Image (cartoon, rainbow, N blue to C red; front, side, top):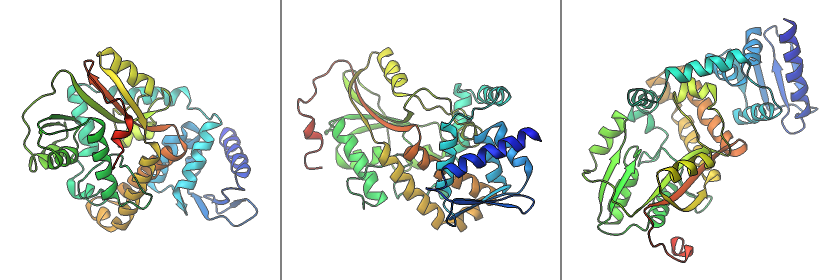
Length: 354
């Protein structure tokens, strides 16, 4: 118990140091309380078992995520303020022990992204049912970063802005062929087809997304040589392992590449990079809209699943927004060409009239 007591003391020292910006109160399993800061905190953390501290000490991410999901760690107040504290604690260097690293490795190996494994991993997240995704996504079911031209854009407008920006970056015109790898629910292909007369091919290994998109569009051709492409992807600012709680419960087999890893892979297949843009703040704002819709429809989510699922997804969505706001997570748009092609001299034509 000495190690746990020492860890508890360390956490309390850290919380005291940040209490000027985030005052809070902890209620322990024996009824004792600890106030951090001189003013009453808007956040109360209830730790219902000493095992919570032991598991936080073993691994901060898994310990926090599993105990919050199971209700052994309760939070009253703004969850993202607590997640900010978690990011702060990570930054000062509380690392996972060897035992936890081995467990993470075993989890990675069991969820390795072979063709069969990838389908299983994708299904775990994306095949939760269209009814569920419809509770927090916009009408186009777009499950990716939107683009906010104005702070007060609705999520529907912002997703259309994103699609229009992509069309402009790839200089989409009539009679073009569009290949959308990882097409989700088909939102971009539908937008592009309404904007221009195109032929489109969408690729996904999610059964639900395939059936949803198939009902709206027909696709029958492939990417041509000397064409232009755009990669819209979440990534890290530097090579980092996937968060162990996310890997275990949300995205098995998931990995967020750094920009250098993406560029190296693009170069390896002899594509030419034309443009790179980081839309990180746009994804934080996108997820904010998703959280609002998720909480507005919380009763319906509970009917579809259970309270544990609600807490798990509440933590996932808030954690994702916190990671884009304060963490290492980025959203890259990389424009590239298959073969050396002529590109416009003036970048401004992408945004003129947009």
